[in-house]
Length: 230
Ligand code: SAM
Image (cartoon, rainbow, N blue to C red; front, side, top):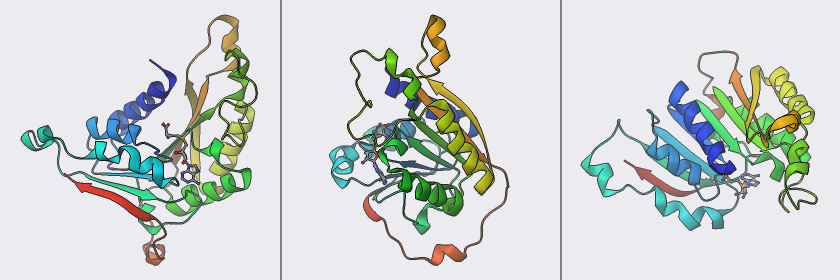
């Protein structure tokens, strides 16, 4: 399967194993991952998508609407889906208390100073149970035919494995998480040494228990674009 499908499948497999109830997808774009998660629910009760670009959100969000079959065969309990226009660099009270945050090919679209706010907002403020972050592994780039420069004109950086891991380990120290590294898209033969085409970090929060409610009183900054309750 193509690489983007392998990235989505990685998240679906994670959800199947760990069964988070509240999941938020940052940089959800045309909601492809959300649509797949809606289909492979595995007990998800709240599914939220956030993107800074309302135009891409609007394009395909109707795909998340219930199908006739959803009413004929009511599945596992109620499900709410919400889409917001907003930035991952902003503190939004309704994003706190999630079990899983996914950031598939998002961080390389942020300026490095924004990556710092992103880390503070996601790990420090939202403090979800787990976070999945995927990003290109620049060490793989020589294997991509005809590629000069970054993989996409909008990428602000592409990291080596060492750079990605340095960032991830600092996040763990600062906010109390553990991380392991994996990826999708493997080269063959001696090229395997360059690592995965897409590198993935899976973070797990070290402490259990719920957070204080105090900061939930902050004003909302996201714009609700779509909401459906099954
Ligand atoms: N996650 C999707 C996927 O894997 O198919 C799409 C990834 S796309 C390469 C990156 C997305 O991140 C774009 O839709 C872009 O609008 C969004 N984005 C960029 N900066 C953002 C920010 N600060 N906050 C939220 N979304 C952002």
